[in-house]
Length: 304
Ligand code: MEV
Image (tube, rainbow, N blue to C red):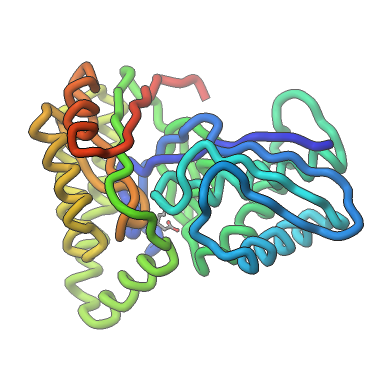
């Protein structure tokens, strides 16, 4: 039996703009998904514990694409998600990376740190899986699921790790119903086709916010980072990917002392994140008083 795990993610700054070649900053959520794989006469895949937003046929097509990419024979895989699906926390990419790792672990066990060659095989397979779900993803989710930690990403340059100067506390709330990334990416594409100049300006500005966010992270300036997150949320509103519930959840977090708050992921539903000033307690309490499921996480300075 092969077994493995992979990270979920929150996008701190830059979603949607990253699809058009701009930069985005992402933070991994440890242990977003686990997978087991075993040899079998025919291939099958099951996702337990959370509802997925995809139908069975899409899941099976994605699994077939992943196995083809790894030149693997028929396998049975079982996935266990630790982040909710369709909420912007990178569940599908975490599942794809965990399954790719579990299949490779079955075919060629290699204990210890993942080699660069192995990592690149995992990423290729996870990209093939993600393309089935999302059409033309930027690749940031699969990269975050593979690497974890905090990095800046663009399609052309790939990932580059960000040396975070001080620990930062983020609060995350599931603020609205799950939404489809493909639908939201298509929505922005249609908006851009109808108003190319205005939307390209918004996308370029989001890319600038992401790069400014890297500087704020490296300098240890949480107040600056929070202000960038607020502006990024306003830009995402202009892209029409926010919802009233996401806007409300950001407002409640700011009123409870957050330095900044924004939707995270593709929008249309799903999660918001808030940057906490020291403690997350008041923000989490505010969200819970409105019935939202939420948690907090710490972004630590890391050596990688
Ligand atoms: C989804 O987590 C992030 C988007 O930018 C899509 C993508 O990058 O593929 C909305």
